[in-house]
Length: 312
View 1 (cartoon, rainbow, N blue to C red):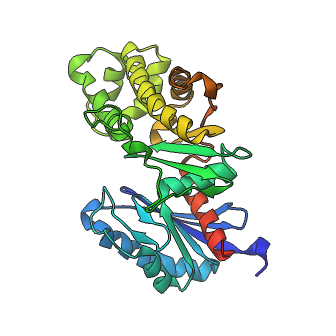
View 2: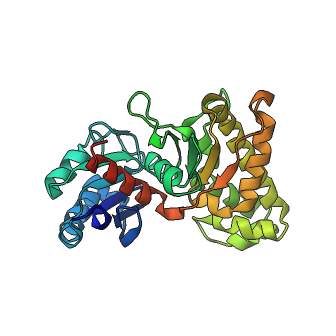
View 3: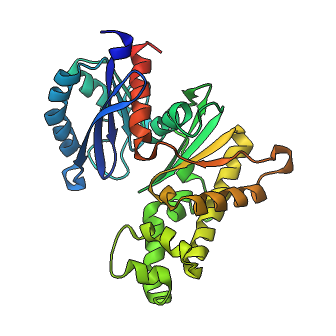
C-alpha cells in the first residue's frame, strides 16, 4: 500500500466518550465511530467495547498503526496507564500491549491533552508556530506543550498538568475553578442567588451542561454571565502566565467544551494574560481558539500512529 493510501486508526478514551477514527496519511478523518461510556462498567466495559469494534475496523481499513489519546496520566514510553481520575479499572493497565495483542499492530499511547496538543500544533491553530502551548477545559482541565513539532514530555509520566497548577496557597487548582463541571456548578448556584438573571432563567431546572448557555447570556448583556466570565478568564490567565514565563510559547491554544463560549472567553483570557506577564516577555503570545474542535484528540492520535509507523 502506498504512503498516500496508507491508513491509520486513532482512539480517544475519556470519562464519558469513546471514539475510534480511521484516517489517512494526511490525518484526514475518513470514518468515525462514537460510543457512550458507562462509568459504572469501569475500564473493563470500555475494553469490551474496543474488543467488539476494533476487529471489523482493522479488517476494513487495514491500518498501519494505532494511536491512542487517553484521559489520564500515561507512561508514554510503555503505553501503560497510570490511572484514570474518572473511570475505575485503568490503574497500571498495559493498554498499548493489550491493543497490540488484540490487533497485531504497532500502538502509541499518549495522554489525551498531549495528543490534542500535537493535533493543534501540526494541523490546527498552532500551524507554523513553535512552541505551542495548548490547554483544554472539559470535564477536567489538561494541557500540553509541543516543541519542534513534537510533544514535550520531560520526566515521566510526561504531561503538562495545567489543570493541577495551584491558584493559591490553600490548594485550589485550575481544574477546581475552570473545568466544565466547576463552571456548571457556579452557574447552577444562580438559581438561588440571582434567579432573575438571564443566565439563571436560561438554565431553568436543568442539571448538567449549564455552561452551554453562557455565550447566549453574554450576548444578551447579562451581568451575572459577565461576572462568571471574568472570574474564569482571570484564573486561566493567571495560570497561563506561569506557562508563558517558563516555556515562552509563540501561541496559546484554548480547546475543550468550555472553549465553545468562543470569542468572549478568548478575548477575556488574552486581556487578562497581559496583566500577569512581565514586561520583558511582551507582547504576550496570541491566544487562539482550537481549530480542530472535538477532532483535536483523534487527529493528534493519528499523527502519533504515523510517527510510530515511521519509527520515530
